[in-house]
Length: 121
Image (cartoon, rainbow, N blue to C red; front, side, top):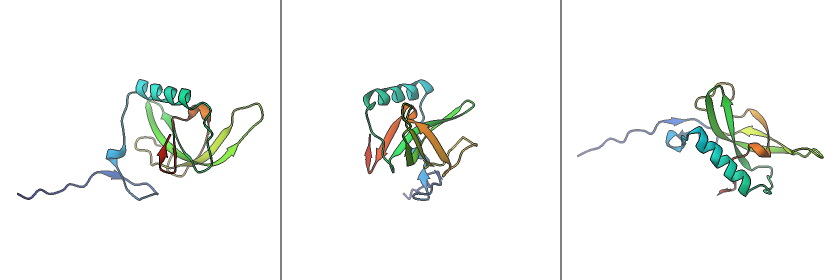
């Protein structure tokens, strides 16, 4: 019996040109909030570095996508929260007002996960 292999649906990204849709996880809003809170509590003293990838939530109306931003610049302001700046490193699947490569500024309190040289933190 011959079984034809069907191609896995994919979206493009600029790192490897194709990212399989199976790499996209779906979770309820409460689950995302719980994971974010748990990461923040566990990593409150974690130091973000240039070239880290930080996962943050992007929201448009009722849609939320959790995507990685590659940190390019860290701005420390005395007596204020550090501001991170980077480039969106994913292609949004549902969001329309942001795209791969867009500049993003965010604070530590928005970080849900960090990826650093083959290690997920």
